[in-house]
View 1: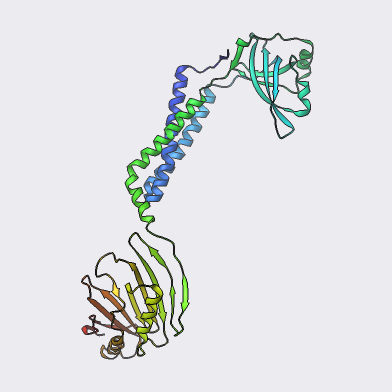
View 2 (view 1 turned 135 degrees about the vertical axis):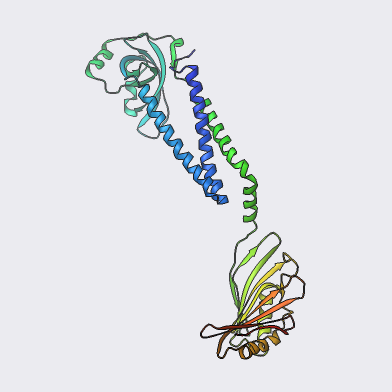
Amino acid sequence: MAIVETRSTARVRLKAAVSGFLSGGVIGVAPACFVVGAILERWLVAAIGVALLVLNVIVVSVAGRLHRARNPRTPARTALAVIESRRAISGESANVPVEFVLTVAPDERSAYRVETRQDINLVDIPDYRPRDVVVVRYRPDEPWDVEIVTEPTEAWARRAATESVDSAPESALLAGPKDEGSFCLLGTLGLLLGAALVVLPFRADLFAAVDESTTTSSSSSTTTTMSDGFSWPTTSTTTSTTTSTVSGTASSEAMLSDGEMRRAAESLIKGMRTSSAAELTIEEHVMAVRGILGTPAAPGTAIDLNAVPYERLPGLVGVARTKLGITNPTSWRITFEPAPKPGVLTIHVSVTDAEGAKASLEADAQARITVRHPR
């Protein structure tokens, strides 16, 4: 029957348990605040988490120093002990852990038994036989903390060789306090509750952030060159819960040539596998499209690439270059703006000269000019 000796009173153990629970709670709150703040980009919350963690480290460090100052450990003392039993535990190094049962006979108190484990060199194990008297070091305030002195002083070695130690009864076996398990449990419980206190109020925002992040898939990039001279590289593909977009470009030496825009559009439709586009831009040598795969988010927000009057667009460019007051235009650009009503489309044609002067016009879905913006 083991006798547990400890200096801890019920009040001290309760204080330690509460401190462990609160410390675990702070440790749970601090990283939870940092993670939640980083995910939701609420940097004040993240800063609070870092501050709590630093504060907890400071408080624990100061409290430990104060405790050691108020309760200094008693210096270790030396005594004789007799080995009641030993059991070597297999090890992979030269020093083998050995479990000893000792009867310690201090000069100032009655003998008692204690269990201890100590690493002993494999060569020296035969020197520690049962019933051998050895020299040990122990602490009066923690008598279960015993260590065999492998190299005692000459005086103690002489005493161990000449004196004998009577075995203490098994009922005198001492063991240290076993409260660490419950304290660890309380600390873990505090950590989980602290993390929950932070995560639960922000759970709706966190789930929304996760849902938003899962609506985007990976990007892919391919390039295909058509036999007729057009090239359309698919630069990216972004997928959401209902639709996805695919971008492509087609190049030509003379986009204003007869039938050239139509051929470029058909090559893009074939490559992207869709005739719906969110954006369409035509310049002197490039046609760029951001296509829509699937159902558009709202009716009328997509451009039907097959319905664009490509054959009439060169004429609009010609009007913009000669009738809007730009003497020597150096570049032109056509953009398309779909209206909420299906089939309604606004075509914007702009020209620019070398000095940066601009002029533009607007046309409807049949390429009929509706508005002019001269220089």
